[in-house]
Amino acid sequence: MKSRSWLVVMVLLVLPMVTRAQAIPEALEYSLVYDYLDELATDGIIEISEAIRPYSRRQIANMLRTAAMKDSLLSPRQRDDLQFYMQDYALELDTIPVYHSYGYRHASQWVTKVSNLSLADPSLHILTPKKQFKMRLRPILGMDMYISKKGLITKRTYGAELQMDIVGHVSIWGSIRDNSWKGTDYLNKTYFPTYYDQIDGAKLTKPGYLNNFPGVQFKEANYGYDYSDSRGGIALYAWWGRIAVERERIQWGDAQHCSNILSAHSPAVPMVTLQLTPCWWFQFDYFHAWLVSNVLDSSYVYQENYAEGVTKTHYRPASKFMAANMFTFKPIKHIHFSFGNSIVYAERTVQAAYFIPIAFFKSLDHLLTKGLSGVENQNSQMFASVTVRPCDHLRLYGSVYVDEFQLARMLRKKPDRNPVSYQVGFHWSGWPVNGLSLKGEFTRTRIACYSHSIDVLTYRSNSYQMGHYMGDNAQSVYAELSYRPSRSLRLSLSYLQDTKYRKYEYLRQNIAGTRISDPIIAQKPFSEKIWRNDEVQFNAVYEVFNNCYAHVDLIYNNARAYSPTSARIEGEDRGWNADGTSKELSGAELQSYYLNQFTPLYMQGKNLTVVMGLNIGF
Image (tube, rainbow, N blue to C red; front, side, top):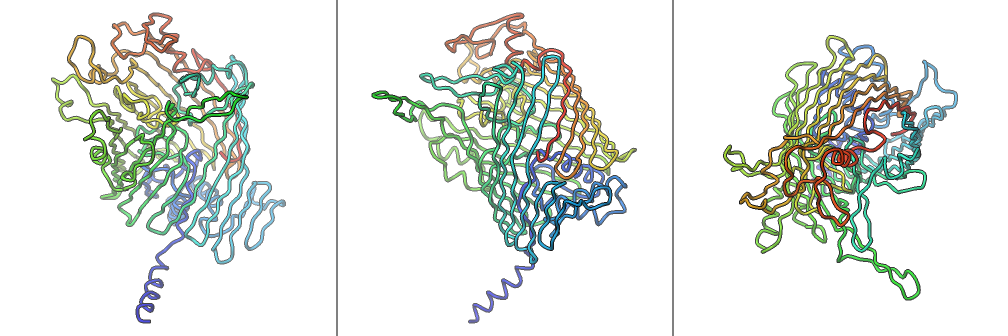
């Protein structure tokens, strides 16, 4: 009885410490709320760590609560935004949202003590009296139109989203979005160009263009392309952390245009995630993910009874996995430092060693494969991100991603160079005009970064880069001036310059006639450009009510290609024959090859495109 009494005492002591830290992630596509939180943090009103996204809805609710406690520091527009967003996160604040329009409650709204159904702002909320069960149900519906002199392209989206929180320790959520692109001939094998891996006629599609759109796996249709996006998960949580099985887009590394560590450019993947926040100055994140290799395994096949006496062989993709961790420290106020490492591996089944959250995966890789003759190591990486706010209104940040590292490569006499990517940026906000914001970001990625000599081990999923969308031997410059004049309205003018330099396949053999190892790494990066796109964009977006967006974009772009003047080296991509062997194109023919490879036909050359859309959900 004595031991049981102590158990009761411990439970009574621990339960008050367990806050309702609901673990449902807020989609990265909800850019307005993330932009608002960045503004508050840069103005010194709240403190957040931008290195790990998405934030949970509870995290966002707590940030809004903190801002409400500093009401005197907010401008009138920021207060309006705060009230608006607190309506959206009402369940996370243990209350039912009450919708108003111009100061009046919608007549179509039904409200009780435990539920709220809004037809004007379509959503259903349920909160039981003891707050043991919370539920949110929302529709997803949208239409976007792309208009230029080349024609009209439309994108239609519909679906639904459900979120539930049970007894303050279990979160369950899920959503489905069915998307369809329709338009002119630019959608037929040109707007979304594809490449094919072939083994006895089997095919896998791969994306073939450079942009920052979220990656998807398209299904071909006679009118264009379709794709569906189902996300969700289940999480167990307490005040000190969460563990979940989920499929969500994630971003690692502080960035405003595109992160060079994990950018969420590739499609969401299923993963087991762990997050620990035992104290205010430390956070630990880990995941183990099941990637999509898009590399066919000739030894892994299905046999189908295709016709009488005839069987058909279906080749399956090779297995591909990833494990990663990130340690975030906040040594003093306004300085956040994060570092971690990851590994992409392609064993037939998952490797138990990579489920160790706090591990240096390269060391584990050496243990598992180094002693085997003729066996190549897996693909490991290291990275770090730092954010500094030296004063109110200013945020400085930078990150580095290291694909391979050898100390000897840092010596001037060595021709080899470490394949790394680095990024720096700033965000100036709220001065001299409240709501005015200036952002800048510069990214450079050296040769062979994100790549590998074994295709199944590249830093990709569904053939999309998991790092910066430009890939290796590339540079990106981004600048944005934005203004938020009133509640949930954002106007922005941005400039983007993307440049791709000479493209190489990652070969480990020697260049003929030399003794240089890793010859691709030994090439000078950023030497001759082969493609460039300049883009100026004006964007106006207004959140009519929670999760309902109306937007208009005016986009001018100029995409063109160049032909290198230097001689081709072994492994350089200057065209391919039908049988897969390399050839050396030149002049206008080579420029056309690069332009078609990196730019959809709809966006080639100089274009003025108008985009209009209305979306419920995102």
